[in-house]
Image 1 (cartoon, rainbow, N blue to C red):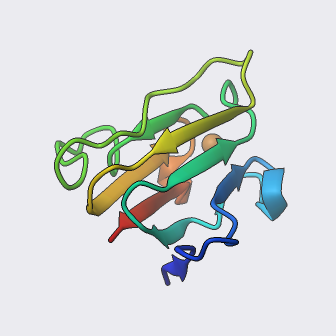
Image 2 (cartoon, protein in one colour):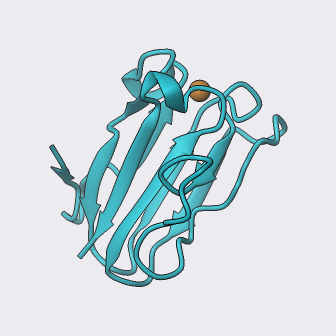
Length: 109
Ligand SMILES: [Cu+2]
């Protein structure tokens, strides 16, 4: 279920709330594989869909090592670009809609 987005011309955009072909309560694509050093752009309405690192608000596991995904709920920005320097699995979720499955993972190889 991880889409390979390691290629030089691959899109590494994760949209949500209707951005990038996503549904209102989904990330699109929700799980992608990238290479270490590449970046992912999260785009959508962060005030309606606050982004958080981790697999859920009660989870202590933020992924492999230090998860570089920031908490973002600022409605003055519509895109956040995150660099992933190290291999690992880095989960993220929407603070408002994770119970509905609004979650995803960036896999860095
Ligand atoms: Cu949401």
